[in-house]
Image 1: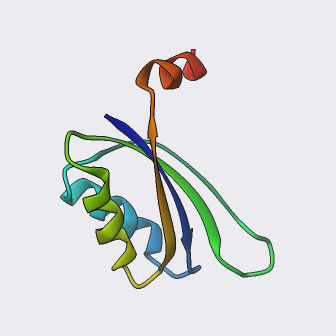
Image 2: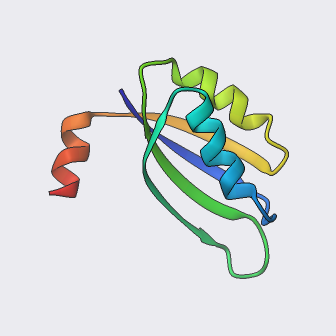
Amino acid sequence: MRYRLDLVLKPAEGALVRVIGMAERRGFTPCEISGRPDGSGGPWRLQLVVDGQRPAETLRLQMQKIYDCESVEVTPLDETATLEAVA
């Protein structure tokens, strides 16, 4: 199953690595990543699409424990819609 994680991260060194590493350690494969800073040195807005067979709620709860993660929302994605968007 594919999920999109919408994250807000503190602009800290290594924050992105910690987020991707957490997803991988929890059994999810990162498929797409996009993000942007807000331009004023404030938080980063990040979208991470992952694929995995485990419950997404487990990943959401673990992501919230990362010090640099201010918020995280998980949205299930329809795999056929994701593939069509890429094509």
